[in-house]
Length: 541
Image (cartoon, rainbow, N blue to C red):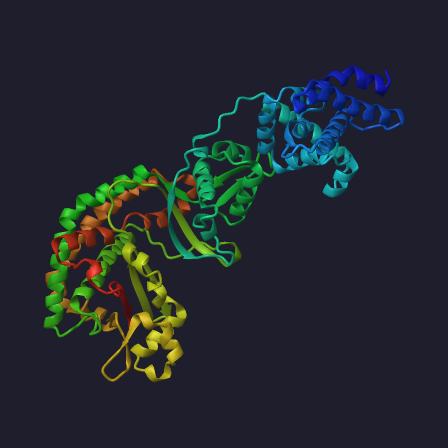
């Protein structure tokens, strides 16, 4: 059988129905199919030997239809449609895909689920009509390899089209996740650009949610999230390079990806918040008594533990927050839960991370903390409430190295060595006294207040007799809470991520928010909106 005869037997009728479907007119379909067949038969008669007859026939049909549209001046007609994608189906089934348009959506779906290796090969060969030799040269592989991969890609396409696929819940109901983060980002702003960049944070968050404790291939992630592979692959590749995901396996189609940090459930968060609420009733009045008594003893000893730069109402916030941290850190040490490092990451990063699935239940105020040191003996600390963070994102700038130098110079009585330009950098944290000299507006601890003879500005004998018993009761309540959190967290952290356990324990709901919430309700602390932005800011000299 000649190629001309083969064409007439196998394609004439299908070409006509193709034209009828595209034009919607019997006479137009007869004219158009005649033009297509004439061009094909003429080329075959002249000795053209197409390497793949089916793909060649349908490419001519598509081109001729496009020319027909232009000639008829049909505005807005879609040229791409089914026939372009139909060529990507198996070579022995191309025409059926054209004649059964309901399969086109399945075809496009499966193409979007193929890995880059197979997808680009199919598009190059069938859509872009590239020759085997050209593709082989582009990929720097033998032509035989291209043919083998094409055959395998067609098999995968066929197999997928025969499957009933259901996109996962995350494809239409994406979840939210929050993060507890410590350390410095990398030079390319990782991990922040994946977690907080509004352009694609939801995609990245849901990749992390789906891959947590669930090693997933790219195709599985694509189906669950409803994201086509051409988009998904780039995110997954970058997130793996930046250690947010870990990859297992080398073959693109079977390699799996899993989230490389801990994500705790909303239920675990609820349990820990509930436990914190249980101890609040005993913790808050005891802490208030401790703070009031220590103030009386400090003044009796002639000590202003936070210096003369703030009034006492603002100092109370710092003292309360310091007490909460001192108690919690003491229990971390007792239970061997110390955390003193940030994991080294690519591109100069040094950070640790824990995710928390969105939690809508009762909660205590969030209060963060930043610090900076200079020459190992001066520390600038800032407690930051959520309201403060919203009102003044720059509040934590006092802990930046350049600003620490300026502020420490003022505190050491060397204001004359500080230029006006440098003072402008720290205008939020200073004021001018009656002499026009700059002075800070936040609390200043003295190291001597924690010397061998003074504890928080109280003589040690008095501290041991009066304050220590209260402090030990606070420790007992805090240990009850953290021991409970430890049990909850051990059920949340996978074995392969247990090296991150201590960091996760430092990311549970802190005593700070619970204590502040309680002391505001008792009236010991004034609401923060009634005070200045400097509450919770202090340095140690």
